Image (tube, rainbow, N blue to C red):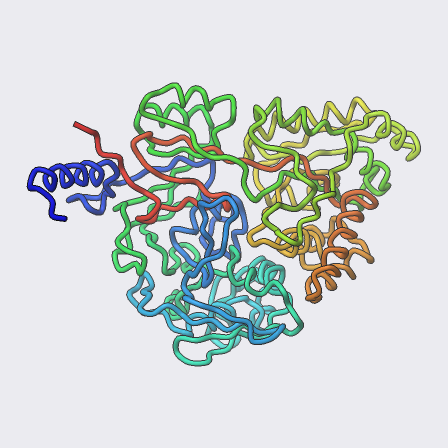
Amino acid sequence: MSLSKRRIAYLLAGALAASTLFTTPSMAEERPNVTVAVQQIVNAGALDVLREQSNVGARVFYSIYETLIDYERQKPDLPQKPGLATEWKRIDDKTVELKLREDVKFHNGDVMTADDVVFTFSDERFGTLPEQVAAQGEGKELFTRSAVSGEGKVPPPEVAAVAARAWPNLDRVEKVDNMTVRFISKVPDPTLEGRISRYGAEILSERAYREAETWYDFARKPVGTGPYKVKEFKPDNVLVLEAHDEYWGGKPPIQELRFVVVPEIASRVNGLLSGEYDFITDVPPDQIKTVDDQDKYEVVGGPITNHRLLVFDKNNGPMQDPRIRQAMTHAIDREAIVEALWGGRTKVPAGLQWEYYGDMYIADWTVPEYDPEKARKLVQEAGYDGEPITFRVLNNYYTNQVTNAQLLAESFRQVGLNVELDMKENWQQIMDKESGPRMLRDWSNSAPFPDPVASIVNQHCQNGQQQQIGEWTNEEFNELCIKLETTVDLEVRRDTFKRMLEIAEREDPAYTVMHQNAIFYGKRADIDWHWSGLQSMDFRAGNFAVKMPSN
């Protein structure tokens, strides 16, 4: 059946109207510059994914780096998808083989090959070569070439520590051919695909790394494959990214992407509403209406794969008695906190786990119940004498962090515990064991891939940060850590994980989960952009468009 000229004209007019509703800036003559106001860019002053494992780092790194396996980041269940690898398969319990994407260009113009992937996961990159370890021990060559061989970089020891948490059993990454690699574990590893996709497994340019004068030089201007490359970086101030027009995923829709540090939420909100910023991060629930009431602005966001925790140091003062830590877990009215500070926009989770764990999710697990009487009884049984318990807190690194800490301190006082807030300026001071007795601190844990290994093992087992800095350990728990990482039987893994939760959350508390974290972004209403539960801000062409005004 043929169409009349009038009908064709009508259809073309409708198609034209639809195509101009969401027009990506890359289709226009000029792409926009976009400014994002954040409370912090990175904590460690470096743009290295093995040095900066943080919520704030996860936000910016996705524009610079990419992993071999990625996620559908805007979907609630976060399914995996091809990234820098187009396909992968299991060879055996210890081996995963991946085919690399053709014609992927780094920011320096080099084409990515298997050699770059092998180098990214090498001992040299991890900072674990004998000469690197020796230089780190001397404390004099942390950011320079090796004093022994004159080749390679000597990263700070934190890089090796993060690598050990992320890849405790990695034997090697092997080049099969120019576009094929194999990840080979020393032991059976059911989580290899997850580790390959995780934050911290991003691929970098071997040549760019080697040509940088120092590790610090590379960490200030890293060379990845992402849609944007580093133009300028001033720690605690600004990160300016510019479009990487040879990006394999299509021309980026933004010409210049700026992340600026604006610590105070009032300044971020005012800057958004005045047009100074296009996006702002970490909008607290009590400010959402202020933004949403403006026609030109809106708030998006919600719960993420990150839980807010209190972490215990079992080696100091009253915290040495597990009954004091147990009392704290029962003194917290988590539901009241979620309602008062979050307006019910997040939830109290089932311990340190997320539903996207799938078959490894323990659905019948719960956090310790709110029971002040039980908490008081435990305090009395412990013979607590009123010794001050110091609670280390940052100034609103997390949304409503100070107010939350004040509520918790009051809850602890009501069950007989003398808790004093100890305000710190940065994470180094929070973790430091030399600046007074560590007892209690604020923290959060993320799950960068869908398995308990991603969080409870990565943060609380032998290679996890809590044990690395000497806050907590438990012999049975550590044996279970190894079992969880190396057992492939699903039911055995589930039973192992549940027992680990029993130890770390109830019997000998290492931490206690308060609530699932949430992030809310204020943004221009004329920008079509979707947030991710993985905390990354995605500014690729498929996730950023400007709504053109209708006539």
